[in-house]
Structure formats: C-alpha cells, structure tokens
Length: 500
Image 1: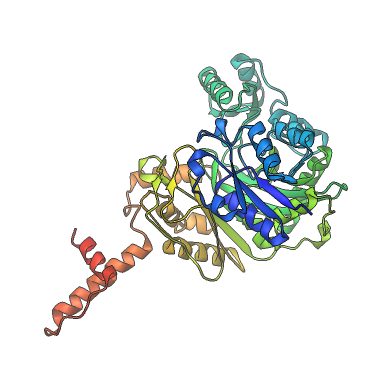
Image 2: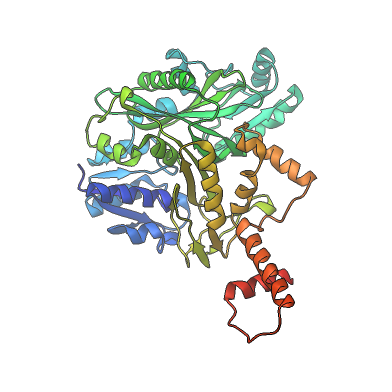
C-alpha cells in the first residue's frame, strides 16, 4: 500500500479521500489554490502544497503543477477525485512518466471511453444497446439535420467530449437545427477545446440510470448495481438514489451485465460508471461512461456496504478485488441531494460569500459529506456545491423521510442554498411515488410559477418555531400577569419574525 497520496482536488471530495487515506494508514497531502488556502481539506491533510492562483486553469487544471507538488512532497500516488483532471488522459500519462501511481483507469481506457462517439462504438462492439444515432461526429448542421430526419425528430445534438450538459441541445424541428448546432459547437469548443458534435434520437421523458462498475488490474470486473439519477436541472444531477425504484432484480442483472461487457471491451480497471437512458417500457440504451469516481458514490457505498475510495486505492496498488460478482449484496435504500451555494429564487444563480452559520444534521440514517465550515468563504471561481446530504434506511420511504428530516435540521447562514428547494421537491407525491424522469424539475418549477407556494426560505424548522412562538404569545395573553421570566433567544427571534 502507498505511504503518501496527493489529492489533486478540493472541497468535499478531497475531504472524502483524506478520510480514506487515514483509514488505510496513508499520509494524505492536499493541494490548494490561493482561493483555497483556508479550506477545510487543507486543514485536515497532513501537509499541503500550493499550486497557483485561484482560476482553475492556473492551478487545479495544470498537470505540471500537480506533478511538481507530488514530487516535492514525495507522494507515491495521486488521487484525482472527480472533475478537474480526473478524466484527462494527460494526467495518468504524466504520472507514469514521473514514476507516480495514478489512482484511476489507464490513459488508453480514458481516451476510448472519454469521447462519447468512441464510447458508443465500444458499446456497440460489446453488444450493448445504444440510442439510434451517429457513432462519429457530423460535419455540420446540414449533416446533423439529415441524420435527424432519418431517425425522426426530436433529436439531441451532443459534444463528443462533453459532460455536465455542456455542448448539448434538444432539437425538435429541422428549422431549429442550424442555430442549435452553432450554439452547441461553440459551447463545446469553449468548455472542452473540442467542437466534435454527434446526433442521437431523443427519447421522450427518459429515466437516467447509471451503473457503478469496478475492475482490478488482474482482469476482474464487477458491477455494484444502479443509481437513479433522473432528478436533474439543465442536465446536471441534483438528487441521486440507490437502488432505482424503477429497476427490479432481473433488470438490474441485465443492465449490470451490459455495463460489465462494455468495461471489459475497454480494458477498464478502477472505478467507473456506465450511464444509460431508460424508457417507460424498461428498454435501456447506453449513453456514455464516466471514467472516474462519481459525485453520487455514497449511495452505492451505503447500500452495498463497500468503501469505494478505499477500493480505488487498493486496486491502484495492485491488489485484486476482494470479492466476486456473486458476493455483492444490496440492502435498503439511500437518497442523496447536492447542497449548492445558489439562489433558487434567482434562477439558481451561484451565491458565493462567507458562511456565517453552519449547523449540520445528525441522527439515524444520515450521512453528510462536506467541505466547508462556519466562517469560511465560498469562492466564486469553482463549482458551488458545498456538501452532499444522504438519507438511508431499510426502504426508500424511510430513506426519503430521514433525508427530509436532515434537510430541516441543516442551517447554512450568510449565503443562499437550495435546501428549501429540496424540501419542497421531497414533499411532492410524484417524487414520493418514484414517478420521475429527466424533465421532473422543469415541470415542477413551471407548476410552481403557475401556483406560487410558500416562500422558499420557510423551512419546516422555521415554521415550527413561528408556530410555537405564536402559541406561547396567545397563552401568555390569556393568563394572569406573573413575574417576568428570562426569554430564550430563539423565542424572541421567532416573535420578531412573526411581527414583521
């Protein structure tokens, strides 16, 4: 096993990897930009290396800076987390050249599966179903329109190097193709430096189901079940759960076997995720692969009882997987939501700033992966996710109930967050019934605009405090005068709020 691991990332995922290092007796080393000098992951690590100015292209995205930092501290290996350089083939190649182990897949597997068109060709070769469309980039809007006419509108045009919804457009008519193509290609070039665009048939109201795969360097490959990732905003996942309420044991076996076949065709090892679209008839179609650890890995860890980050490091060190497919078991359910520093009332605009209060939930069936603390300033330069909150239990209903309870207990002061938005979402009958698809949030927001409800900041906790204060004031008014007793601060604050 490694003696020292450098974590080339920040925030909650860097904290998560630091904790796995501690469990294995490995010394964790953090890196930080100028904006992250006082970050929580820097405080937790055994040592920390500065890697440059705040903008990611000048720090977290510079391969040479990361390698130099690893050499300075004498790290045996580098864990990339997710995002930043985690899916850049230049990173494992630079590690190999420097004699440092990269905790992830090979550069060759990354290249094969990192391009969506190449990944589609690999899936087809593995005999897995894919959505109708092209397996190579098209030459321009005219060819894209020809393809769409062949398979029928609506169509999706996607950046071959894309991710996170960038370089993706839904095209419903031929007249919309040219402007949509220009927008998607321009966005792809700006985001990924690659303007290759391909075309797929659009599946109406699909579910987004992904399968966790894991392989070692000895040829062993398993799947760890599926995650339901249909609750998305602008093609970005915000709620994930394991297992999917739409997938039964037989379907889990079929989609898991397809995921393993694709991974095997790519010569894949370490953690990876196969992403599928699924229609209402339970037909599934391969979409893409993420050649890294996923943001939502905690729900799989909880339901399978496996530590995926620990497994990543063991496999990278050359150990075989300590279990077979037959050993994998799934118990209970887990639901995760991503807590962002953003303002749902202002089109989810990022809300950087100082966290003036930070109270975290606790109790049975709650897990919080966080990278912030009270008094820390959320920077503008990076993704605004500050934590991942998970509820889990013996079944989905219990997991959702515990997550709602945890959301009601969580307080983040000084900035806006999407906690209130999640509380509203998880009270909806369609969500509680597991009736969802990738357009769920857009329909929910459209419905709320038509019939406005309570203000988003009126969480269950605040309403309870106001109700208690009102009840106390009515009781006091009906009782004879008595000696004044000290008044608690929360009651006073609640009464002041009630009288506004």
